[in-house]
Length: 197
Image (spheres, rainbow, N blue to C red):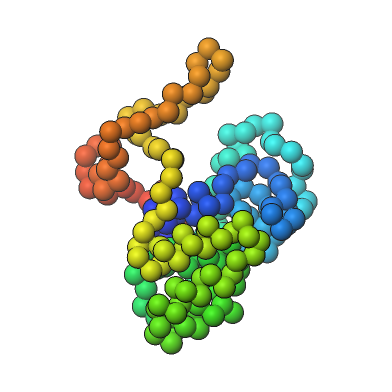
């Protein structure tokens, strides 16, 4: 089982993308899309400080590391959870584990494995420190319980790709009248998963 495209997008939105090492809210050195040394190489504590000179290469590296990390976290969730999962439940659990690293010891896992999905959903809120994480936990709980993916202002339009901004060319947000994620730009059904490979 793998995360859905919507689950991956929600996770990236929670984590953000920083193509250089930085200290997170708990003062842990982090790189890219929430990658820490606990997830494996590369170790952000040994990376050169600051943003890379080649920002595009830094972003590509962040996504390369993310693909590797996601595969590890998906596998850990599948090892810990014995109950059958709907795709949105799996997405919520991988997001939770990616952030906490606690899927194997979490009360929500014990409750889910015991067959109590409502208690498992409520147990997401047992992981609420620092306080800034509470909206993410609520979003993960709601995704697990109701299949409701977090909304937001991110827009993607395949017909109008992003362009570099400059003072003479300010940002013009894409505002398509309606996005249809169930169709590819060529009109065929479904988006292709671009990661992990």
